[in-house]
Length: 320
Image 1 (cartoon, helix red, strand yellow):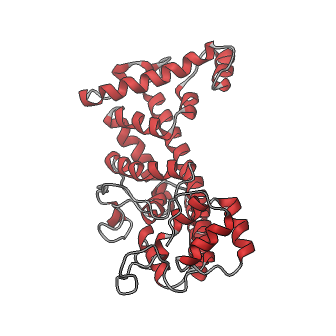
Image 2 (cartoon, one colour):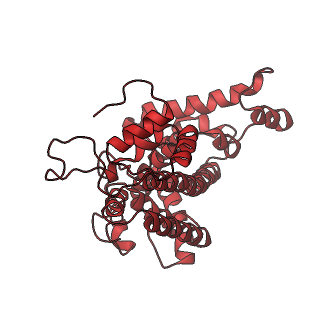
Image 3 (spheres, helix red, strand yellow):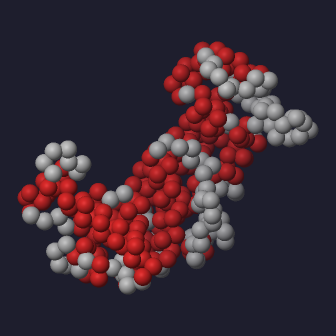
């Protein structure tokens, strides 16, 4: 059996797939898809749930597809993952915006002096945080300095704000921080502020659902799960089977969400979809849940049986 280590045109690619047991019913359509989506991204990225690993049926461990697997099945999973990325990124960006807003508000509320965010004394006294604190302050200071440039300014909005107000407050600067930078900011501020921000999320949840307590430590855990998905979604990486390399300790969040202990700690797609309930408005979360259910049902209609079970296990939806 040939292994693709060389250039192969679309006809040759389809022939190789057929030699490995994949059913290609519509060659013209398959060639059109391969020309748009790229063989490596489509096949290598999404073939795994369809591979035959049963030693009785594939004793030599060759790259073979399970009997009955069609090209359309792989493409259905590819489309599902693409729509899943878009759906999750949209909600994670809302969470990111909410996080930035709360941090800027609470920090500025407590430290109202001009450029108070550049003062090391306004952050955590814990020496373990000082290195990261200094990096955060340096990042903010460099953003402010950008207004002095008159050409090739990365963020013209900062310069425009400074020109108009002669100052750039934190609630403007946070909009130009990455999620990773805002997470670092949250980790190095005073514990009292950290807890207040976490409680703000809990209060919003309590107003729309039932009473909830959320600690800064637990909000850290939510961010630890959400951050990789936000980046992978933005960079169009395979997302349905991604999980964190190390389990995340979520405190009592699983029990508060009426979920089985340990069901969220692996950081699967299921984990993120469940944790988003804590940080999105109820109406937004209901729309997200409905769209996610639609995607899952559409995939189940196109990819049935063992392959669908493998996909759901990879994504953390063990009960489906």
